[in-house]
Amino acid sequence: MDDQAKSISPKLSATKDAPNANSKIDRIIAVVSGKGGVGKSTVSSMLACALRRQGKRVGIMDADVTGPSIPKAFGVNARLMGDADGNIVLPRSANGIPMISTNLMLDNPSQAVAWRGPVVSGVLKQFFSETNWGELDYLVVDMPPGTSDVALTVFQSLPVDGIIVVTSPQDLVEMIVDKAIDLAGSMHVPVLGIVENMASFTCPDCGSTHYLFGEPKGAQLAQERGIPAYATLPINPTFAALADAGRVEECNVDDALAPILEQVANIHYDFE
Image 1 (cartoon, rainbow, N blue to C red):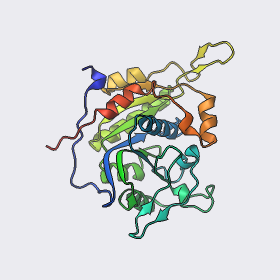
Image 2: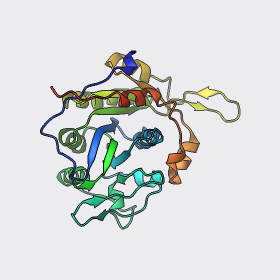
Image 3: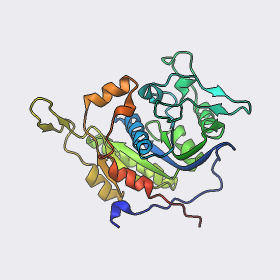
């Protein structure tokens, strides 16, 4: 077994919140970045779609409470509803992915969400513990950028099994990625892999590949930090157009994400 196929064994903590009685979630994967604008929500969406194409039962929690974008990418507009027991019932994408987001709570999706940290943290705990997720193999949590209260809430309250770090080639982003990795380490959550987004652009006319933000550095970053998997995604205007049209499920970058998917599949529990 090579380094990328090594299993990672997160410790289970009795202090973590549990999903509601109607939910069974096997693994929780948080997708993080140190700053905005690197395509974290795009990677979250594509990761969930790739797992769904493998036949896995996948849900998405849009934890970017003040800047939610997941429902739009999937073309989901239905409002959140409650069942007779007071649990939140989730809308699903065209391919059956349940999701929750503050945008599904608003009368107008363009309305600003101006909530203070404790309110945001409380909402995220409700998203997990008061929601009928059903049976999931994976819950993908699209985190907000940075290392704020929301990140602490997720890592401290939810039994996260591992994180995927999204970056882009700039030196500044590399520095900020280190902050996200450091936070994960302090919370004892393993880093499963790095996805270097917007790594290159291939000209549709001449076929030449251009590195608009500098040479990719994700492989070196992963090696230096001891992170077991690395993947790279190009700039592709088609992907952006599909997400804007609510058709992100038509994007297929499964081959590019294969090293990340392998790490996700190899998580196992350690009950020591």
